[in-house]
Length: 382
Image 1 (cartoon, one colour):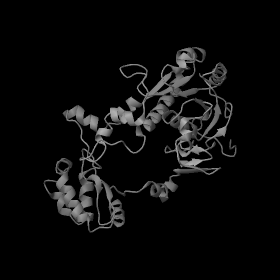
Image 2: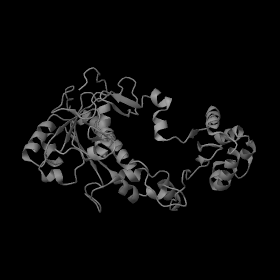
Image 3: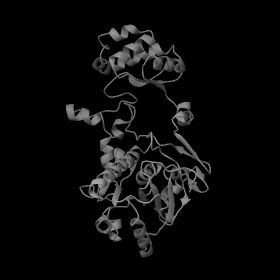
Image 4: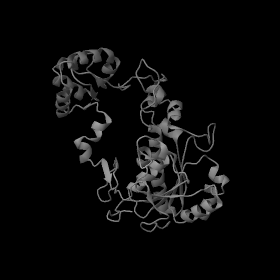
C-alpha cells in the first residue's frame, strides 16, 4: 500500500469485496478502486485465470491480469471449503459492495448466495456479472465475450462488406458489461442513501451486447431491413469512412452538410457540395460508392499528415489510422493522463472519467497483498 498517495476519490470510504475473475467483474472493481473505493480482491488459491493469459508476463503474471487489477489488494481463499466461506463472511460483514461472477447457483450451493446474505447484511449491494442472467431460455448458462458478440448480432455488422462476420478486435462486450456493472453499483449506492438498504445488481453480457447495437437496432426497428456489414463506413451517413490518400489512410467523420462543404473546400472540390447527388446527408449516404471513388481519386494527391491538420483546422473531424503503440505514445495521451505509471514497473490505461474535486488516484499496484479492508471506514447504510 502506497500511503504517500492520498485517496481523495469520490468513492473514498466505500468498501468493495471483489471475488470475480476474468474481465467484466475485475474491470468493474478496478474502476471503483480508481475512484477511491477500498477494493479487496479475493482469488482462489491458484489465482485468477488471467494470471496465465500471456505472454507477455512479468514475474510469472500475465499483462492481461495487470491491466484489470490495480487499486486492489489481493488475498487467496478457497471458497469451496468451510473455512474459506467463514473467512469470506467476515469480510462481507465489513463490505458495502460485493462483486462476483460465479456460475449461477454456485454460491447458493455453498450457502452464501444473495438470498442468504441479504438477510444477514441488509445494506450490502451485491453485483453479479453474468453471461445471460439467472433465468429465461439461456439463463444461468456461461457467457464469453466472443460468443456473445456472435449471438447478439455484433459480429454480423463488423467486417468488410464483402467478407465474413468478424469479432471486434477487443473484448467490447466484457468491458461494457463491466461499465454497466459500475453504473449499477453507483445507482444502488445512491438509492441506499435514501432507503438504507442494499440490493441485487446484475449486469449480463447478453444484455450489454444487445445494448451496443445502435444504430443498427434503431434502423431495423424502423424499416425492418436486416443490417449489413459496411466495413469502416458508417451505415447511415457518409463520408464517415477510412479513405486512401497519396500516403496513408485517413479516417473522416463528416456528420453534417456544413462539415462536408468545408471538407470539399479544403481538398479543392467545392463543387461537390452543390452536386444534387451529394449536397445533403441522405444523398451522400445513398450515393456513397460513387462519392468514395471520387474522393479517393482526389485525395491521391494529398499527404495524410498534412491533410489531417488542414481538415481539423477547418472544423472537419479527421484522424490518422494509428497503431496501438502510436496512440499510447501520442502527446495528447500524455496530456490527458491516460497512461499511468506506478512503482515496480507497472504501466496501464488511466481513468477516462475526470472529476474536478475528487479525481481518480492510483494507490495499489496489481498484486498488492492484503487480508482485510485497510482504508477509510465504511459508510453508514443510513
